[in-house]
Every structure is written in structure tokens, then in C-alpha cells.
Image (cartoon, rainbow over the protein chains, first blue to last red):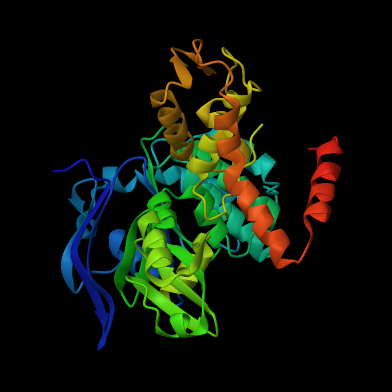
Length: 292
Length: 126
């Protein structure tokens, strides 16, 4: 058994002819905060559901805390928190009753934390769930996942309906929850700037494959956009080694490289008599460049 | 104390490295000065605590910061005095290059750029 919180091995999932997850192997360790990025339909939700054992893989396997996801003992389940894209709150209950129902599933429950979060996040505990707005439901659904202080927190697009203030409060709570370095968090989001703040590792899913995985700092340091200026005939024939995109205009070229090294700039400048300006990219720009 | 921009192409830990280096070089953070705790800084900026501790660990390895048991990290007590003028100038050089390039692209003259710099210099908010 390994120390990994989550371990996936050659994981695949197909729905009919369509292969949604394609031979993924990965590991999540305590202390990791993993941000999952991908276009709609890239397989993010399916991947998270496979991890949690909600659906069986077509091939390969995944385990949580050393136990196969499809047969998790109750003790292991109680170490996992999950915020689904569609909340599973019970319309007819009040917020207080809903909190009681969830609390009853767990032997450990941090009532103080929940009471504090209800206050800070302005969750009205007297309201009936069916009278909450979409954003309020989402807040409650997130809050519930923190109550048993999970060692693995899985969040599928948790902030889509939250206002900026609520999103910030949620991020602060994630910082709190991950500060001891013993817990792991994996969350998918289209709000790239949130992932940029919180994640130390990034998974970019593309057609069911991990197109890029690694730490965010390395990703930012290894991708660069080069703005190259020079004589029109030089630019017309210029090649940039390792470029994932290259656009040439008269006297001006733009290239994006994946394995940026400062030597590349020098060699371009001396070989071709051009000037090169280097621009580092935000995660959102990198994501867009990798999908061109 | 620090200005962190998560959406910049420069990783957050590097932004922090640069700012601490600059503030120590200039003496703005004198020997013995306390730095905010990892948790404090991470919460304030809503960034991953590991990112902050990565920067602190690197600064400790450089000999700029000292770890104190149970207390905040501090600026090393035997610092090279405020770094040589030439080193401090070297640290600001990339920013100067960028500014000059932008000025040329905007077809601003040297006098106009210097005037703008002077006005910013005299602005108390900076």
C-alpha cells in the first residue's frame, strides 16, 4: 500500500463508442492541491466520479487511501468530501435540518466550524432549501463537505454560481483546510484565476488524456511567448525549435514554446539577426495556447 | 507588505522572492525584521501555503532569511549591509529595459519619459 491519497492506474472509461477517459495514470499525495482544467466534455466530471467509485472504469483501476474506489469501507468514505456539480440537497428541509442529516452520517463533525462558516458566508439556517437561490445552494453544498474535515476533498466546478465575495471566502477556507499539509484537494473549475491562486499542481485534460500535468510554477516557467522582429525575408523563413505555434507577419513573428530556455533567445538573435522579446503567460493564456 | 499577482506569468513564489530580495537589499527590511507567517500570507492573498513556504525556504537557503523555532522568520542577522549600488541597479535593470522599450514603441522622447518617471517618484502613494 502506498502513502498516496489517490492512485490511478491505466484508467479508462468509455460510454458506448466514446472513450471519455483514456489510459490515465496519476497519483495525488497529502498536501496536494490539484486544479483540473479542460474544455467542456474533456472528461473532468467522469474522472472525478471514477475516483470516487461512482462509476466503474472500463479498464484500469483507481484507489483511495489504498482501497479500490469501487469497494470503499465506511471508514475510508468518511475521510472523503465531495461537492458535485449538481447539489444533492433535499428541497423540503430547512438548512438546519439538512445540516443535521449530513452530520448524522459521520462520527466526527466539526460543528463549530460549520456554525462559523454559516455565519461568515451568510447562510440563513432557518430557510427552506427550496427557497434558496442557486448560489446559496452552492455555498451550502460546499460548506457541508468541510464539516467532517475530510482528508480528500473533491470539488467538481464548485464556484460557478458564486459571487466574487463568496468565491474569495471559499478560497480562504480551502487555504485553511490545506494549511496543515495533510489533506489533498482536487477541484475542477473554469475560473482559471482561482486555480492559479490555490493549485500547486495542474492537470490539463484534453480528449480524455492528461495533456499536461505537473506543478503550476514549472508550467509557467516552461511556456513562453516570443515576439520576434527582423527583416521581412528573415522572418518569412524563420523556424523556432519546439514551438507549439508560430505566426508570421511582415517583419514580425509570434511563437509559443513549451520548453522555454533563455538560450533559445540568444541563439535566435545571433543566428537570424532578429530581436526577441519574451513574454510569460498567465494560466488562462497557456490553456488557450495548448488548445489552439 | 507584498504585492502578489496570481494571474501574472511570473509564478507567485518568484514574485515573493524578488520582493523580499529587493526589500532586504535596500534595507527596507532590516536585519531581524519579522516576516508574516506562511499561513498569514497565504490567507491574506488566498494563495496556496506551499507556494509561500517554497519562497521562504529558498530565501533561507540564500542566507537572506532565518528560521526561528516557534517564531516568525526574520531577516538574517549578519546580512551583507544593504547590497552594493551596482547590485541594486542590476535588480531593477529588466524593468528599466521594459519601460524604455514601451516608451520607444509609443514614440515618447527621453525627456517625456523622464518627466513621467519624476512625477511618479514625487507621488507619495508609491
